[in-house]
Structure formats: C-alpha cells, structure tokens
Image (cartoon, rainbow, N blue to C red; front, side, top):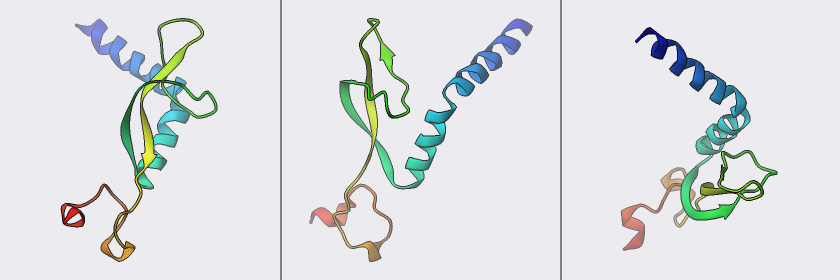
Length: 89
C-alpha cells in the first residue's frame, strides 16, 4: 500500500511538470471564456500546447479543443458564455 502512496503522486507530478505549458495555457483560456469542444480525432497543431494522443509514430491527434464561444447577446448581460436559454426565444 505504501508503494502506491509513493508512486501515484510521483507519476502525476512528473506528468504535470512535462505538460506545464499546456495546463498554464488552458487555465488562462478558460478564464478568458474559452470552453471545451469535441472536434473528433483531428491532427494536433504542434505550434500550440496540447496533450495529443498518438497511435502511430507520425500522427498525433487531439479529440477536444478549447474554443472561444461567440456572444449571441449584448455584453451588458454579462460575460460571453454559451447561449443562455432566453437568447433562443
């Protein structure tokens, strides 16, 4: 049991350190109003920080991307988020 208490935090710590740029960029974008969108298996943009999946050596891909939602209502109603229910009436 002690070995799991040592290995699991070590594994997640190394994973975080290796992908720190992704986590930093994602948290900034989420604060700016970006949301996760399912895009299906799409070729990874190697210029942007990401956590790509890779089945074959030359084909990294992503399944979700952060995208900024477009406001469909005036800014005086608050920050831009997914369309509120009253906006579709």
